[in-house]
Amino acid sequence: MNDSAAGRVLVVDDEESIRFVIRDYLQTHGFDVCEAVDSKSVRDAVRTSRPDAVVLDYRLQDGTSLDLIPDLKRLDGDLFVLVLTGHGTIQLAVEAVKLGADNFLTKPVELSALATILDRAVENRRSRKREAARERGGGRAADPFLGDSEVIAELRRQAQRVAAADRPVLIHGETGSGKGVLATWLHASGPRAHHPFVDLNCAGLSRELLEAELFGHERGAFTGAVTSKAGLFEVAHRGTVFLDEIGDMEISLQAKLLKAVEEKRFRRLGDVRDRHVDIRLIAATHHDLAALSKEGKFRSDLYFRISTLLLNVPPLRRRPEDIVPLARRFLDGLARELGRGNVALSPSAGETLQHYSWPGNIRELRNVIERTLLVTDVQTIEPGHLHFDAAPPAALPAGESLAEWERTHILQVLDEEQGRVEHAAARLGIPRSSLYQKLKKYGITRHG
Image (cartoon, rainbow, N blue to C red; front, side):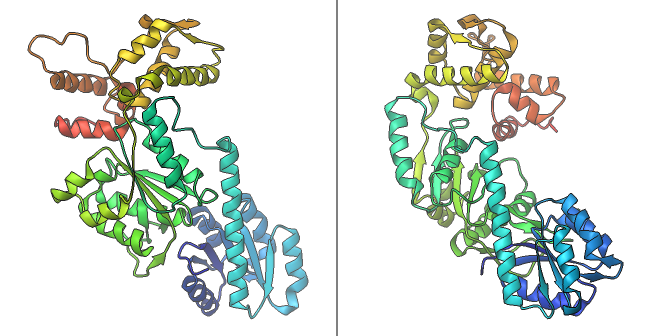
């Protein structure tokens, strides 16, 4: 119970001295505390701050908990409501429980008992959310080791050893090679599988936005921060944080990340209080971080801290024997989603897929299969049905380099998508982070 991400609690009492005592005790035991004094401010706080639990005084300035509890449960059916009551209103507190309150304590409240009840309530709430997420996701992580090639078999062996280690992991691989799928599998196969998994792509985010997303912020920390917000480190307490494209993180923010990983503590933007958190970090990048650290573009101490366990995901072109089985797996799944029934892949179409270089790797392969299903209605896919939208023509125009062709192609797609980077990236069959990198590389500023 000494964890800084024990949960968010809304303390409701019209006496400031009582709120102060409860708030101070709960904060020293790791809870994030917000406050309210009447029914209206309680409803507003539940809508905006999304607390895990409410400690609700029975008598308020504008009513009692009997009037308020049904509304709170309508706003958040999973919200834990604990009523504080004087000895003379115990029977009314029992009535509050019948209306939906989860527990009640008599005043003066025993703070250690209150903290224990809240800690258990928050953990139960999170467990229910995790179970619901597992049910929605089919209960298991996607398999990152589809195929029979030796390189993917070796990755499987290494990942199985790494999964149980509960130490930081660095995944290296080209864009679209399946680093995110592998990170999800590592979490699901490790000791934190029953706790949260949160992910964030560091590419394309400003330092300020990335810091706020990771560590959260207090109200008024910057323009637009109208309420306090928990960061991903707090959300992932006892679970896993996956930072994709960590090589794109500004070096000025890396020191704060290192401290959070090593000391398991950090501060929200605009806060003066350290928060303690227990997470496992999994990072991924397509950059050579060792080379970047030697050039002073990535902190060497952070690199050494996160790369103790290193996994290299092979590009699709290094595992050509896996391309057709992967294509058929995508074909079966996407055909079912689209209500197409059984759609076959001809041997010659399979050969065409194997001879393509796949610069976008597995993500591009899936994109090609999905696009083919969307623009054709055949039951057997032949080579002519395949649409490699991001591929250059077999023969470039005279005097035009591949880089020039790519720049022109990106501009054309951006124009057609009215500058919307996310839509353009989907058209090109590459992740948004990769498109941002190409925009920077080619000096393209015409994007939204």
